[in-house]
Image 1 (cartoon, rainbow, N blue to C red):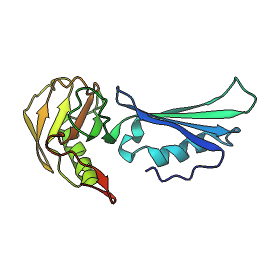
Image 2: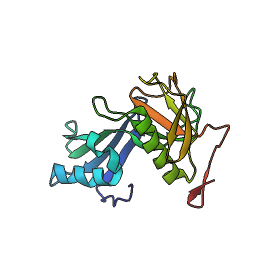
Image 3: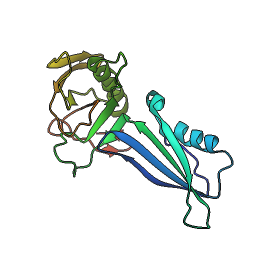
Image 4: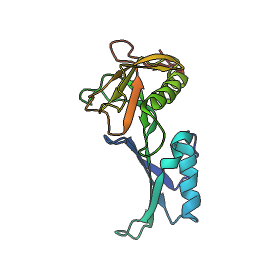
Length: 185
């Protein structure tokens, strides 16, 4: 992901995760794209993790207020990725965590989601997570979840976690990594 050749007439305007867990990428281009679908697919392939692509929606719009012909591509998806949390976020207990969307109406349990997010966390951070945070109590509430990466303690009632998401990681007081030399220490 993120390995994309930005054309000279393109600008990445915004790349954020909202407090609702929705990732939004906004790209602007001078001049009409030859093919809206191809333009969107180029950026979706570069920015959206494979395991989140089923949740992608996008739109293209023209800037109507100017004669310069600026075109905008907006891509949205439910986050399923490693995120660095800003210290400005109130109540957030970790610096890096995997934000994992749990879709409604699918056979994806909280335990399964914690396990997959824990695996992704270990892959990205080089260390197993120790905690999972949820906003609400799951149907089958457990104090811990056994994952392929080890035992993860489950904390519920975390108001900073978006609805229908689990966030997996290590609390700051346990490990507050920095990125140096291509890896987290």
